[in-house]
Image 1 (spheres, rainbow, N blue to C red):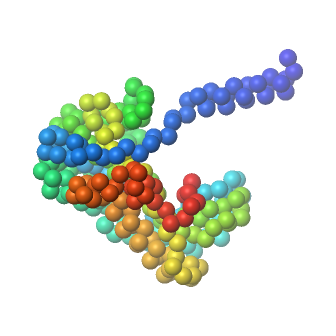
Image 2: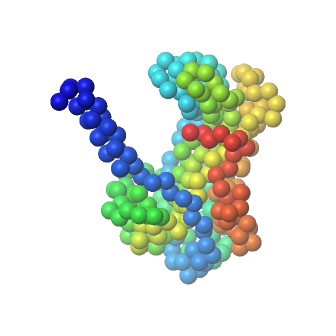
Image 3: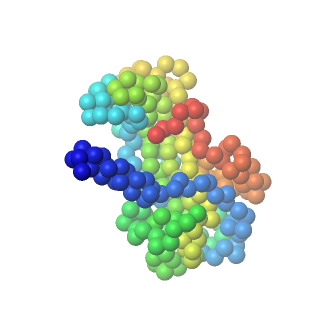
Length: 257
């Protein structure tokens, strides 16, 4: 067989194999009233470690492009890394408080959850968690677990190779979910992406007041989206996935990734 043809066939086989192993995207799961009553058993609440406040440049496609984007936005990156999380680390406490107001038996777990260290789930299928959370059932004496995983916070600016295609925007991205530890399935799954532009000029180093204000607004909006499903029954009804407020939120039609 021709060497080039053999190499091409091998490459196609690898691509097909990788495609077959790709994990299907998880759809949002509405948090029902049945999961938010006193009969739900003991429910744990935990957060994963927060990422560093930073900048990201989706669309950068090569090392030289990344170097160019990093240099162009170096002052913004330096500023981003000085910004505080505000009340974001208290998000799990706020969720626990809302659940307790509903009469639920809530356990705040110790420390931060390292999701990557959990084993992969043996079961696959719709609304089944990719990781196996069952070990936490015995560890904390709980039947369900609420997890908040913030995966991006700071600023995002989209690129095509080394050319910017948008102005920087404040960013908060993450996902919240409730795991039924008996079945390792989602009782709630909600991705949240907030991207907020500066109200006026953004390019005002070194303190970037317009983008800084947008950053704190993005934090507030993101926390509201995570908290809303645990509020009053009326507020929760308004937060159905059919309602725009509970879908991944952005003031820009362009995704962060």
